[in-house]
Amino acid sequence: MRSHPVESLGEARFDSPASPPFVEDDGASEFEPAGPRARVFFEPGAARAGIVTCGGLCPGTNNVVRTLFLTLLHRCRVHHVTGFRFGLAGLVAGGPEPVRVTPEMVRHAHRVGGTMLGTSRGRQDAAAIVDTLVARSIDMLFFVGGNGTIRAARDVQAEIARRGLRIAIVVVPKTIDDDVPIVDKTFGFDTAVAHAAAAIDAAHAEALGAQNGIGLVKVMGRDAGFIATHAAIASGEANFCLVPEFPFELERLFAALRARLARRGHAVLVVAEGCGASLAWPGAERDASGNLRYASSGLDIGPRLRDAIAEHFAGARVPTTIKYIDPSYTIRAAVASSSDAIYCADLARHAAHAAAAGRTGVLVGRLRGAFVHVPLELAATGARRVGPREWAAVREITGQPELSSPLPPRT
Image (tube, rainbow, N blue to C red; front, side, top):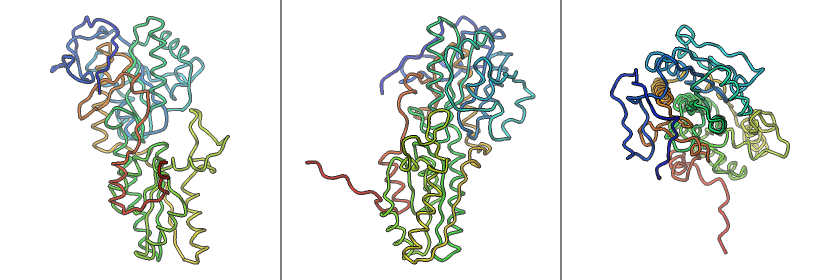
């Protein structure tokens, strides 16, 4: 992986109010190391910041907002922080009215789930967003969001550059699916896996409690099955794990289920919501960001798979008891676990220092164990997916057989 340039707004002319040790840019790293610099671009006490949270709910969002604000206030001497409400909709004229973020406002924010600023999906015009930043004299804007938000932040930064403005744009990557490229992981993922694993354990208990008991758990994972795979491994009780990256055939799944019930008398399945893509049709319902709405009745793989399994075994005259669990929205609104809370704090601190130093068009993330600045242009391309090695580990743990037909040989 070669080095990538990180954009700066200009010369850092002011002494940093933060405490040492400071990061030195020696140019030896593949990506610029994150952390406080000895010199900053924005004059301490004079800059104004904004924060916006976008996309779906995710554990730890309030932790990030709180630590961002406190770091800006106490370490960067940014005394005016605006919270833009309900996602990108709050960054354009006519949208929800922003709020002034205060110490009292964030005091207990990390103790509750959701987002104190509100969120939404959907695109907004980059020029209109920059107009708002100019009108409110915002010097640095922090986006907290996933892949769509990264692309939106990139477009806003490009518009800022086109106008020749000195506004820093920094992203803290937020997606419960953990599918942002380049970085090791996104915040909220560890919490999601822990809750999903608990749901799998509950499904296992239910399956054991009935003759030919089947527990079925649907978890989030729009295009990537990381929650499903990691939760299956963490629990150790799943016998089948179904993810978007590795399609399955119903008849093969039914045959494997029959064999499992005949051998052990119970079975547990976990399925990622993105497997519902196989149910999609032209004109299928989409959300404001253009994504297929897997929670809609036509695309919700959980109930569809539950009903298909029930119908199959009823036709085969095999009595079964199926328990279906969907913890998705419970997981999204959960309070961050201790490990996630620490990770959120690290990401937020580094984001604040990046902006103070005049870095712009960057995402702050952890890469190979070190926190770095990743150019948005790089982070906005592609997405992480469950790969063959990870999938092999899942199959070893679950004992799951091959559920799709092999590709025909090349001629």
